[in-house]
Length: 179
Image (cartoon, rainbow, N blue to C red; front, side):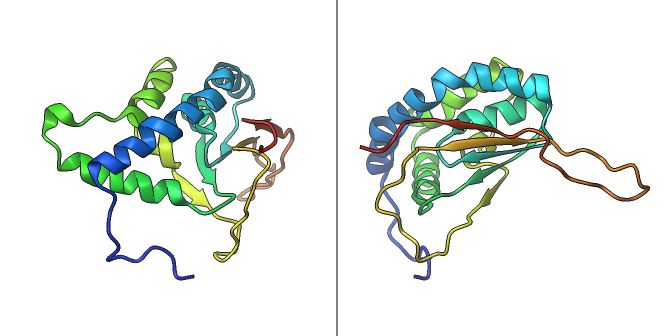
């Protein structure tokens, strides 16, 4: 599979809005709201340099930004969310300013603001994305909606060398088994 065609038809404003307002945002809230405060508290106590978070575990991005850690979204399936978000932002820019609502921006912006962090698209898509799966791999079911892994890097004592070790590994499932 060659990925998304550059000349593909984009989702309309109505289609993209409906996708984020109906299934995406409510599921994201159910999965992330209960763990965001605790995850930020752990990150503040532990001070990781890097946070890796599952594609739907937005609390990982908020926690990383709250402590100034670099963070990446880890895909475990097809990156459909990025396509939908790109289409949404494109369609949003074409709307009159008074109609440019964006619940997928407002929700993480609210959480981030509680910790002194301003919204950026990094809270939705990560500073970068890790896609460890072959392009053709398309799972029909996945047992969790997202995983956040915090990693702390220790500096080595030798001049000019850095030793990276995962002293502690914290994994947070954002949902139970798929139904």
